[in-house]
Length: 488
Image (cartoon, rainbow, N blue to C red; front, side, top):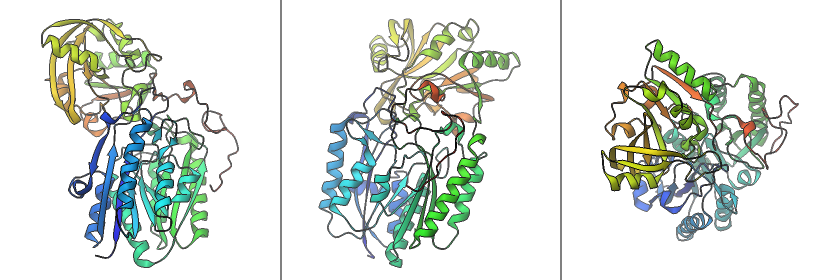
């Protein structure tokens, strides 16, 4: 073997506006030898590349959860200590290559990555550490000081997680085999930007990603990334960062990071919602116009309560609005809404059985501040107990609308969730999903899609959120100003 490389990490996108604490039961952990065979996103890209190049991988664990609120401290510390114990027991190592997110937070601690990396450096103070990051990572000065090099995803939606793992592994291999010291630079751009305004298949992100790739073709450049930060985290160092890793050339890294930051800031007014976007009431009117023209299925994103962006998944404002609409609450087949995180109503539906009517409430179980529950008579139309990661589902009918409820905090992007409950999705004229930009699986169904600017912990209208720690000024909250684009 050419060398021994330790692989492991904790991976989560944490929404600080969501009151739910991410608990142990929501976290999926892959350990040891299982990591060598299981496809685990960026971790697998790292591991398979290292093995193919002749390195011994020393696997620890990869812990992941659906985006949600910050982690319970005891859960984080338990898994962190397990990873650190593996590291202490690993024997001589040549490097670490870690699949991380970059926007994970823990109650009472804050930014998890800098805490984890600080503890790792206390054990391994000198060997190279490289890490893959989500595009929505929030870089901090402390994080940067602890790592030899970062590389972030270049695709949104994130279809290149495996490839980013490969990239991180190749940086590790090149550093070990060339014996050259990596150098890294980062410049903060004072902007908040959501994924729904920064899809990489359209401008300006398409060109900006092209600029990263063009610079990466230079022989001494190991990686260039835009880390966009996470707008639903109220962090003291939040914002966009241009990050460059070079080979023994700090001046080049500094210059390229400044260039990339300047390019991004110059495009600040070009970022926009790429999907047709409306305020909630306007979205209902647009949908009814589409139905009148015979254009359906219409898919509407309830963007303010998007669990894949960390929101609670139980905000009911848009459901209340639909139930009050005399046309959309009387469709045949009914409008279907996917879905609500509400384990209690699922348990009640299971106890009653399919075909029965229960008097109950849905929503506002976890975040009662942002909405009120929908209360009434629910007909149990279908049940399913084998959805991903042990999630149980119920299809409920209330007030002329079909609603999917689930026992775990889960993403709602996959139409297979509805199909598992017997729904012929393509025959539904209107589908509402708790999502931001549409993932490819559900985009393929829509003849027309739109995003409703609803409220919740993933509110796309940032001015409606109560930021307390965010550094100011920041665009677009503070309008136009002269930005200081400085190395961190």
